[in-house]
Image (cartoon, rainbow, N blue to C red; front, side, top):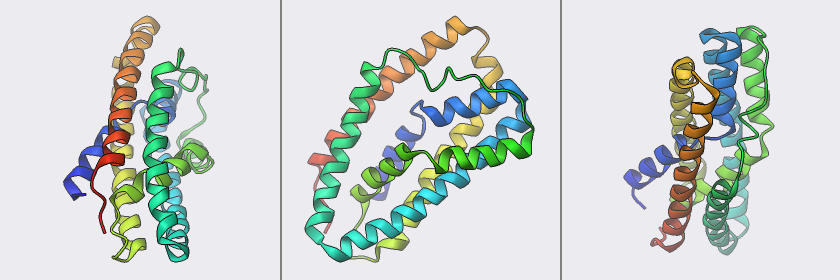
Length: 205
């Protein structure tokens, strides 16, 4: 698949509302702009830890079996569809409703790293998404680090925008809930379409 396809897919996924965006918005509302931006940097660092882990893990899988890697790509596409279906069926944004209290920019940075590093869903996502765009004949670790870093950069950029816009977007709880519901439904459909596309698209060799 082309690099342009990857960028489009990564951008769609970056703007998909999820725990990361909910966390930095909640942190901004609780502790202000500095704390929100610090949490964005923290989640970005935590995301890079997942990228490095995925690079090591996937390279080992490919070294063991090319068939296993191919199966992983299809399982990964199916997992993206599963995530989309879950988003459509979710009745409430429980991750976004968790209350947080002010704690300072430094602590927000550290907590952001810990929260993202311990997020199993992020690890599973990278294992599902990144293999779809790899060329097994080429060195895998550089590809994984590059693509993963781009994903993290896009996610962090979206988090920063969300943090800066938090006060305007969350003027009322009613508007927030309605807006979040529409965004979640749209993102769920996009996730399903992406998973189906990746499963049916021609694979690189």
